[in-house]
Length: 205
Figure 1 (tube, rainbow, N blue to C red):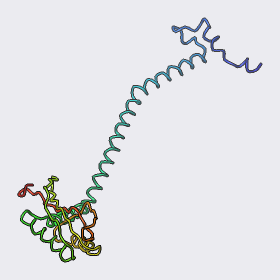
Figure 2 (tube, rainbow, N blue to C red):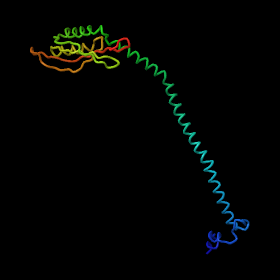
Figure 3 (cartoon, one colour):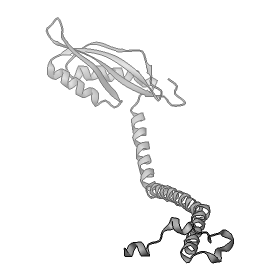
Figure 4 (spheres, rainbow, N blue to C red):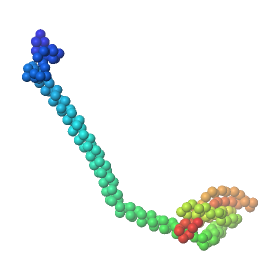
């Protein structure tokens, strides 16, 4: 057939007796060019792994370094752009903290708070059974001053009393409400109130 006549039989070519390394000029052209192509391929492959491959690794490392720098630059630029906003927020927090600490009593003001609670109870038409200061609790930044309260009266009077406590000048929080009945069939309200003292350097707990 035509394909068999024109095809190249590789094993047959390499089995020829005149193909020797010492007489390249006697090689058939097909073997000569095939050998040149093979040698060229080996040289290109070796050059890639020795030169190009190393350069590609270095290039990838450089690209990774640059991408990290771009991310870092973007983060710093964002912080700089929001610097004024941060300063404003810090100033607002300072004002809020100052206002908060002003509502915390010092030791000399604790008796005044007791008087204020008693006054609110009286103005609300309640009978005061107990208003006593409990043991202080150190919370680090501030100290809790628990106050046990027990008053009795009608429902609407008790509502006015609780509302009045929340309007005191000094910070007071209310906890652990319980309702009962007195011997006179009035409603007994027992609760724990807490006021706070800021633990500044000059005012240790």
